[in-house]
Amino acid sequence: MAEKKGQQPLSEVLQSFIKSNNLQTGIDKVTVFEVWKNKMGKGVMNYTTAVELRRDTLYVALSSSVLREELSLGNSKIIEMLNEELGKELIKKLVLR
Image (tube, rainbow, N blue to C red; front, side, top):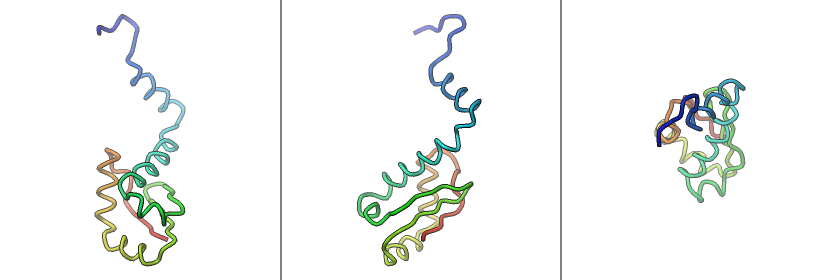
């Protein structure tokens, strides 16, 4: 479909709106939660009580100390997997509580 003069694709208009209203941080926070949920699966989500992105650190609260220890062993792999799914290096540090 050819673009008419003065028309932009909807994706460009939305990106412009997000950028001009400084909404990217909020969108990133929601996206990170969804990516955590999808990548870690139901087993981990059953023990996840909170997922919060602050700056470049992802804080994840878990109700199981055993699971927290298991996940901490693969900390860097989890960060890499989540960033790959996000399509950008948004998370630099993972803190499991």
